Amino acid sequence: MSGRIDAVAAARADRLRARREARDPGLWALLDDVLDPEVPVLSLWELGVLQDVYHDDAEVVVVMTPTYSGCPAMEAMEEAVRARLREAGHPNVRIVRRLSPAWTTDWLSGEARRALVAHGIAAPGAVECPQCGSPRVSSISQFGSTACKALYRCDDCGEPFDVFKSH
Amino acid sequence: MPLDAESQDLFAYTVALADDALVHGQRLAEWVSRAPTLEEELAIANVALDHIGRARMFYARALEISHDGRSEDDLAYGRGADEFANLAIFELPRGDFAVAVARQFLTDAFNVPFLAALTTSRDAGLAAIGAKALKESTYHLRRSRDWVLRLGDGTDESRRRMQGAIDALWGHCAELFEPFAAEQRLIARGVAVDRGALERPWREAIDATLAEATLRVPTTQPAPYRGRLGRHTVHLAPLLADMQALQRTYPGQQW
Image (cartoon, rainbow over all chains, first blue to last red; front, side, top):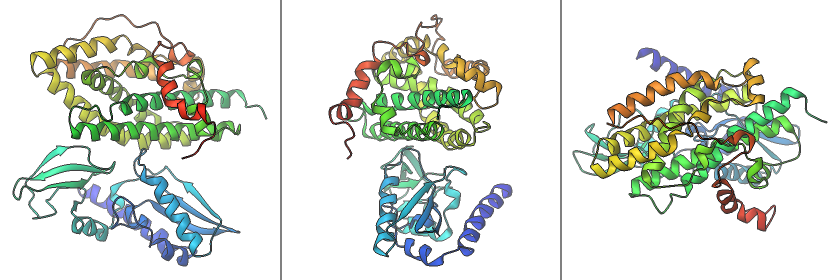
């Protein structure tokens, strides 16, 4: 168990380091405004989709890792990234899709997990009701309203809720 | 510039894997608005999208190899049935819900070890797709296996239908384990997965689940189709006609 926790911490630390050592912090700040269209409390960075953004001659290169293979929000995210950069005076944007390492919910930060719960979506891992905090919950369906969610119900307060699936 | 022999093989292999995923995804998509419950509707649509997304990743990798100016759409919408290389099990008609469950279960149980092996491919692009898709197929298998148990060890009617679906698809499973010529050359180079080697563990896993579901293991002979060579059942062409109607009518049209 502690091995897994170490691995999760290491994955998050790697991402933080990539950002801290960014060549172009201004571009990062711009993209902090771009939110997941289906979970509009997470930025693409917090979601773990945004990997890198930097200038390459006259272009801005954005490296993104898709969540689920069939997530239809990916194109909306790419469009939103282009639009935000265009607004800020960067019309030439190249988006690179990076598949490896595969996206994982281990990349969600502590803040991202708290934002999910505040939005009524249980965070991945040991599922707790986002309404009353009870750990006594039942799975209704392993698949939910979007590719990244499953549907649960609280055995205590009776509320149905979405769970951000561990992936 | 013409492709060298290994690149030609890799292109053919990658497109074949894409075709499997696309045709399965299209069959699953037919369930939207027809599923038995809302939760199943969402589940099937989610799985369909995963398969279609997987197809896109394989097509994109294939086009990085061929550099022939074609797009993912050209491959998906611009080829006829005899140019598709998917295995027959994915193109067979939608059938009832038990058929959807049986197809999902039999092929998920194949895809999980197949994709796990693909992660060690010498082609980094295929290995990355394998790692990504493996997580999804592992999740799909949990649901499809649960349904086989529930319907098999359920009512007389659900058992009859689940057995009928397994029986109907069984003869098409042999094809899952037959490499085609290009694939055989790529196996020797450590690029393609040795799918033949997966048959025994697959069969053991299937036998165990069918026994738990109180279902019989069929004794059907292998079906004579060779999807990899473009020798399909009569069911693929109507599926493609439906899927390709818009691009065939308005070539190059964008949403």
